[in-house]
Image (cartoon, rainbow, N blue to C red; front, side, top):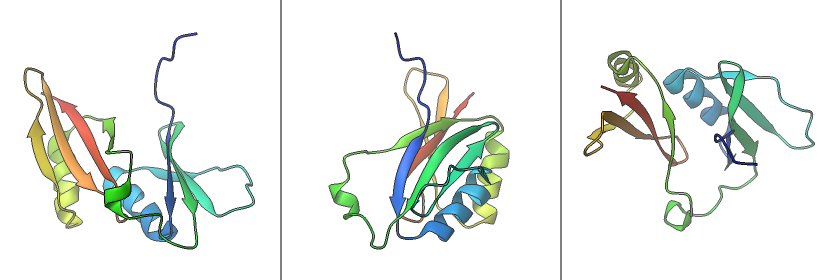
Length: 122
């Protein structure tokens, strides 16, 4: 049974509504159907897949320097449109070319400081 893809990322946050808004506005995800768990949260969809699961917590989880997960990434098309959207929302980002590949990464942080990047083929 080989693993064939990453299904989703699960993020604990004390800023649930702000995080939902960020992932909707910055990445174009849709806040969608979520099982009736006995705790607050949201499932954010890219197309038909819930790729980011948010769990609402009372207090912010640990300091950013203590995180074990350095980043997570998505792939996309239309880098110019994506960057224009980030600029319109005044979301800071950094562009990096991946050496010896045809990938360009747009690196950014969500409101809780989680590092993510969106990869584009050039």
